[in-house]
Length: 362
Image (cartoon, rainbow, N blue to C red; front, top):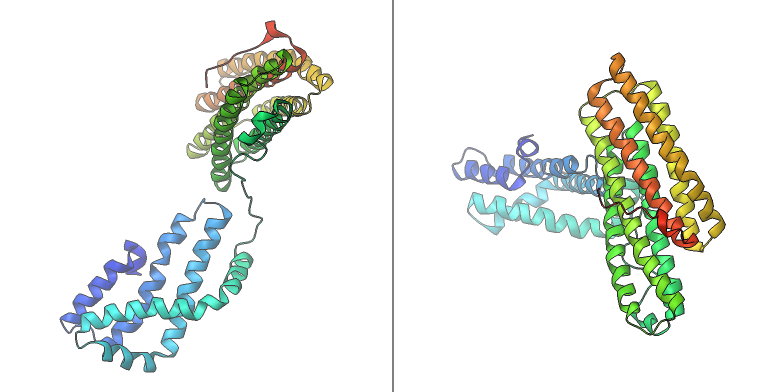
């Protein structure tokens, strides 16, 4: 229990050594306590795994099982283990230190062949499907720079991958705004880190490609792709804004009225569809789908204005929690900007330059 409270087996073992050195605790009593210390130190990992991803929670469970099984083994064979510990030294403090070392070494040797069984048990006790976030570029390589047409095709795929990650984060963040789940936050942040990495690497790749002899049409494609990367990365930032708003709402227990939930769900569905279509349109160079995104932009802007007006009306009538209203306005503001970036992505395909919306504000 003491180890669990102070979250340090080293500290409690040090206390145990001091007591043994003064003759207050015998080695016979110290060895079972030592085994309990190793179980108590699992509290640190278990606490750290709260709210963490599935792999982290399973690792904490394996840590606990490892020490519990080791304790059972050592307590079972304590009559054989005790003489060995006494043989290693005449100093009670050294005996306890040696026992602690032997506990972990022998425990590792005994349980290592059964590691797969521990993993299976952890998977059973902590069920779920782990989501693997693939890091690093997947489609581009500097060796492709000598073939501009291939390089452009692969870069478009990499940008499309960025867009899919941003879209996944958008969908997850919108769900968290309505119904919060702290376990999903770390995955969103992992994906955001990958989006930023892909933005840097793909921008670098296109910058090098720009230095190659290109046809005018190819140079225009490179410029559009660099702009598209900026839009994808900005959408990723807005996704993080939505996550932070969801966390703020949860931390402060801010309520949403049923009307507010309906309004947010309606606008979220429209913006999500617009961005999904924009990503697909840009990845596939689909001008027909791009035109649909552009036509939808006015509808998003009109909905943004209407929801703001309705919100102000609810505030005036006193039917809306002002603090909840801050979150509500923050959500629709980020959604409107995501709609603008979807519009930009579509505009690169249909070449409506006068309608480009360069939003640099997060």
